[in-house]
Length: 427
Image (cartoon, rainbow, N blue to C red; front, top):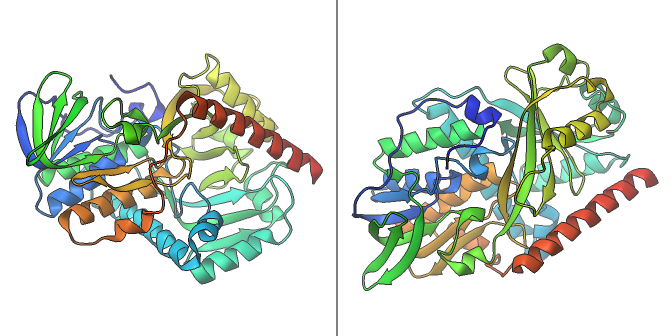
């Protein structure tokens, strides 16, 4: 399938095209999925001397990797407090430090691509919709002291001087965070991996995986076969009938994104902050200024419905105006949805499922640093240079409940919306 119509696809960089697989080949490792995790793994495996084949059902970064908000920051979709409570403080610290490596990996790659990228934006501020007193000060102190974060608390006055709305109160600013054009980053990674020797094939969906005496064989939709020693599954919410144990554990969750027409003067009435922005709601909004601050890119809402609503632009436009009434004349130019892969524990699935078959997937909700991290760690594991991937071993591939699970997730989202509504009106 071609790329969806989005701001990202209309502003993508130009690299040499990739072809469809048209023959039987052999490789040390076959990676399924040319999203950010798969492309990172391919790059690092090739750099380490392995021969690599990547099979992509559509185009480079076609799924969530090329449709997301573009935020790159430390941490995971699961909060560090919950990780600490489940695994202990030292284990949580080790995982957070790995997440920091993922953030740095993206920064390093962005600086080294052969094809110039659009400049990175810097910093990310998370804001609250009701007064939480000195909570942000205490959180910044804790995260900086024990976890090595680079946070700074913002008062209500500071927040409202940058975001001109009475909806927000205090904030927490992350100075390690950046924001990028995610599709261009994926294309840069693919181009990089190709230069290192990776064989990347688009429009070549893998439809069958068989175990051989000495390795594995994958078959594509057009009948071509890849024989390999090891397999890495990186298809997230887009794997279909290839490895049921992973597919049953990954819950496809959709989110929506819009981008306005260029309207710098109007936007300046509301937003003067140049970093990425999100709120701490359980079902929150996330947004940033793009295109030299001429446009607003806004994402929000979570649903298990795989198709976008017909009036998506109007729906998110109303969300924007509810926070910034001064943007009542805003015009939406692009509107799209994307499927993220979530597990019930909200952590990635990283590990060896059986000898020779690996998963590096399910990074929904915090993907850009996490995909870099798990792609790098699975490459290290296959090359035998480290077993750091074992830090994720408590997070298993547990069945997500199928259709019932999706219904439960949707009901949970509605419940979170109700909790957010009640908390904001109770303060």
